[in-house]
Image (cartoon, rainbow, N blue to C red; front, top):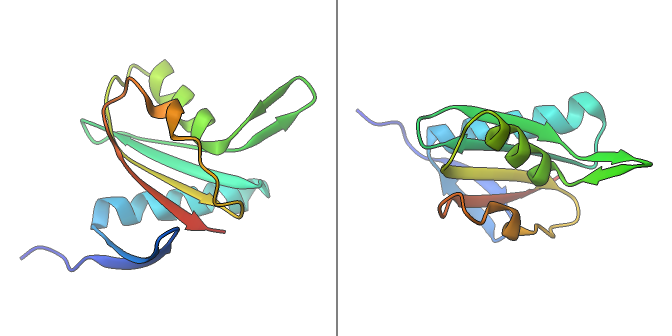
Length: 111
């Protein structure tokens, strides 16, 4: 019997997510909290592997959490993404970073 969808507070209000996307929410929140970063992100590729990152703010390098997670996925050989979750207080997510990697579902979750 399939699991009931989880309900999360997303950028578009409360949304239902499946168990796999709920895992991405947990991973993104954990990355943000663990590092005390402004954002956390998690992405899942087409074969189920997940990649997690937090925003980077260095003098010579600035990346959003989604940019960092996509970079990790791409450098690990991922060519298609199924889903992405971004935990952010800004609510502003540049989805252009996902171009060329399919059309993943993107959930923006308030920090």
